[in-house]
Amino acid sequence: MRRLFDIAVSAFALLLLSPLLLVAMLAIVIESPGSPIYRQRRVGKDGVQFELVKLRSMVKNAERLGAGLAVDEDDPRILKTGALLRRFSIDELPNLVNVLKGDMSIVGPRPTVPSQVEKYDERQLGRLAVKPGITGWAQVNGRAALPWSERIELDLWYVEHRGARVDARILFRTLKMLVTGDGLYRGETGGWR
Image 1 (spheres, rainbow, N blue to C red):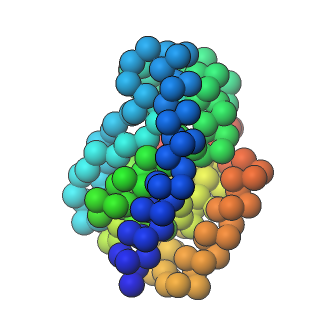
Image 2 (cartoon, helix red, strand yellow):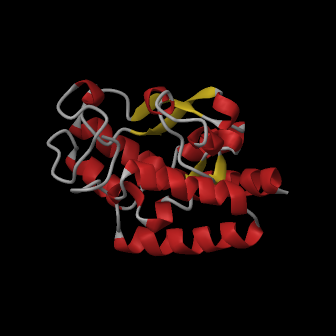
């Protein structure tokens, strides 16, 4: 049932939001030459790596500049268009392609980069027991503003308690988060350090 839900929601959302995606891609290219799509290796279920796709919200090769993978609210690498895309999580919409392909689910722990997973202890590897998601329990309980260890704990809680009721709560709280923008940047205490 979960896979059918993922396919139906991601296909419908991509169809419905394709004009918005095209406008966003055009705005990115006008502001910053290069591909409007950003691709990055992420770790999915059972440690299988895949290529995550999203809209590029920063200057080209941003991960090699400044703070690397860490992103703060006033980061000079963020495009003007990118700030708007990030504020409403529009930059994540291409993740729906990853959901259609089966790399991701609509709900689950956010997929992380291999260098982060390499630092997981045995218990934290339990986070990889389910498909990563576009939104998840850690996302709606503080997002990037949470310390990394706390985010992992919230994701582990989700793995142990996931089900239709929890997923519905997450989806409802995701809509609220999109309106408020809470936890979008790591701030003083959040992020992977």
